[in-house]
Image (cartoon, rainbow, N blue to C red; front, side):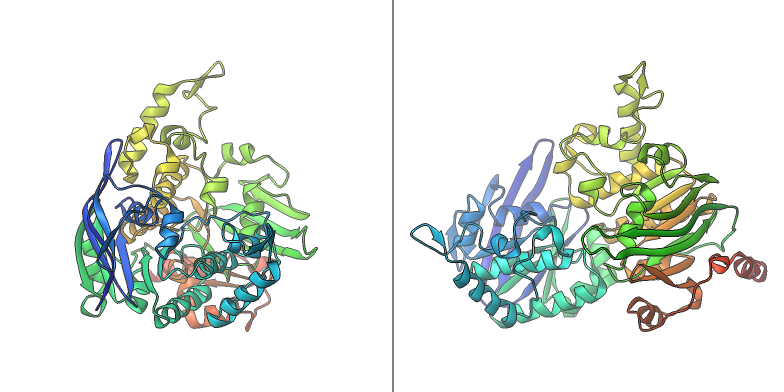
Length: 526
C-alpha cells in the first residue's frame, strides 16, 4: 500500500527533555493509523512537527516519497495536512462559518463571498454527515459541534491527511460512535488519518495499524487485527495493566454533602438546566452522576464548586450551608475539586508546575508568612507530588505547566486536589486525557480516598468509569435526577435507557441514600 507520509529519524529536543528520540512513522493512503503512548510519551509533539507548530531538531518528512519542509501550519495545509487539536483552536465570539473559512475566505474585490462559502460548507456537512449550525457562535454550541467545526475546517481546506489529537476526550459515548463512523467515511473518500488516543477500545474498533511510543521512542508498530488490548497496554506502559478495579465493601458514615432542591436557570434559554435536584453523599462511598452530556451535569458541578450561583435550593457541606459561600471558603472548608475544564478552571497555564500544585494552599502556613510567599515549602510540596503522582515534565517544578502534555496537566490537578485531604472530593471527568496506566492509578487513588472515609462525588460521561468505580449511580436527564441505584444493581443497557430519557423512576428525597441496603450487603459479605 502506498506510503503517503513518512517521518524518518525525527528528534525533538526541549530544555531538559528529548521529546522525540529518532522516531520513524509512516502513514498509508486510506488507513486510520493510531498513535498510542503514555502521557508525555511524545505523541502530540510528533504530530505538532508534522503540522508545522514545531520544527524537528533533526530528521526528515516525506510526502509521496519526496522530502517536504514544513515550517508552519500554513505550509502543512498547502501539503494537504490538517489537524484537530486536543484543545480546539477556535475563536469563541465568531460564528462556526467564520471559524471554518478563517484564513481561506473566498473573496472578490476584498469582500468575503459568504453565500458561496456557506453553500460549499453545507455540501460538506451533508457529504460527511457533520451536522452544525453555521450561523451559531462557538461560545453558544456544544463541545461536539466545536469538534465538527474543526473537522470541517480541514475538509474545507481540502486536506487529505488528517490528524486527530485525542478527539474523543470531550465526547459522550453516542458522539464517539458518530465520530468513528465519520472517520471511516473519510477514509472511504481516500483520506488518511492519524489518530492519537488513549482508548484501546476505539483503536480496536476503527484503526488499521498502531504505533506505540514510550518516553519518546517507538516501541513498535503492529496490525490491529493481530494484537489485543492487553498487548497494546503492556507495550505502552511496560507492564500489565489491571482493567477490572478491586474494591472493598462500602463502610458508610455520616452525610458529608447534602443537596436540597437545587435549581439553576440558563441565562440563554431561560430554562432550568439544573431542575430541583436533591441528593446526599456519605463518608465512605463513591457516588457518580451519569448522563449524556448536556443534561445539567456540568452546571451541577459548577454550582457545587461555587463557579456559578444557584437560583434556588441549598448546598450543605459537613453541616454548613455553603450555598452562598465563596469558592475559597469551600476550598478551605472540606471540598476538593477536579474541574471539567482543566485550562479554564484548573490551572494557570503561564505559571510553573510548583505554583500550580500549591494553588489551593499558597495562602496558608507554611506557604506564606506575613503575607509573603515562602517558596521553599512550595517547591518541597511540588517535588513530593511530582514523585507520588508521576507527573512528567522537562524541568520538574520549574516547568511551565502549559507546556506539559494534557495528561500530565490532569495528573497535576488530581495530585493537588487529593493532597488537600478534604472531606469531599468533587471529581469531574477525572481521567480525561489519561493513558490506561494513569487511569488505573487515578482510580485506585480515588478508591483509597473512599476507603479512608472520604465522600466522593464523581461526574463522568465515561460509562466504563461509571460502572467500575462508583458505589452508587445517580442518572441525570434534562436537569433532573431520574434514577438512584447501587452500581451492582444495574446493567449498562438499562443505565443507557435512563440516560436517554426512555425510562424514569420518581426519586423521593428520603430515598436518595440507601445506607441500610449497603450495610446489609456488608453484613452478608462478612
